[in-house]
Image 1 (cartoon, rainbow, N blue to C red):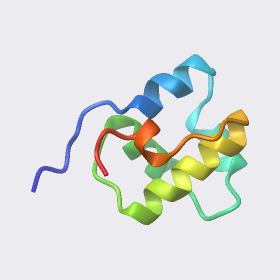
Image 2: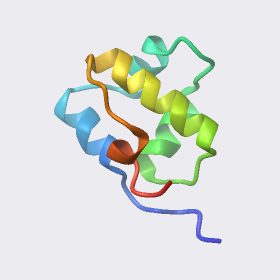
Image 3: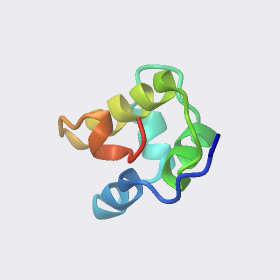
Image 4: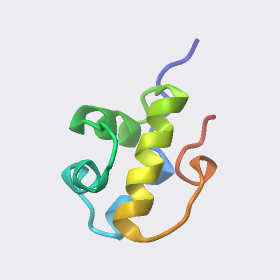
Length: 75
């Protein structure tokens, strides 16, 4: 199974908002680590639970209401 999906849409969206990995970790109300956010941006495979956490943290940090499909090109 392929586990490297290349840069994800979340990376571009975070750059657009000038967000760092730490900003997402700080905005998260769940256990989210810098390592998981970095993997999400680079396109390493994440579990669905981790993708939910990253998406929730992104939405909390930006005030947007995006779905997993908007931030990741694999589901």
